[in-house]
Length: 139
Image (tube, one colour):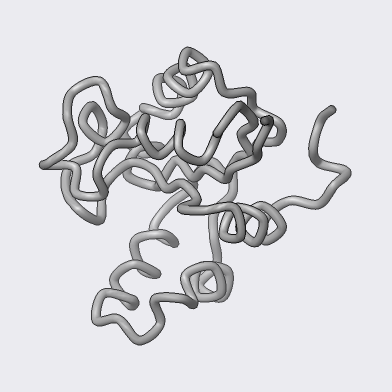
């Protein structure tokens, strides 16, 4: 069954010039890009997007990191896309991510881990709608 998921190529990976390599890994995994844009999140956008972590001690650092430079947000489609993209990303902590995963190749630690992906269908729906409207998605 075709499914949508949300992806962010984070500021660390964009600054390091790895956006193209990461997008190629996504395409090579068989996922289709349905929508994509480069943005520079405002503090308000980052706080809203990561509101689920508001009470966590790392929230301020996370917002600061995500607003530190441009990132690339996209909507991905594929069979079991959420699981498939999470497998491709690798573990959250890049130092534990195997080579061949996005985080294993391009992340440096638990925060500067190159990418974000939705963790479930409800999250994917919310995250996609946070950055994209229906007109921005291609058939």
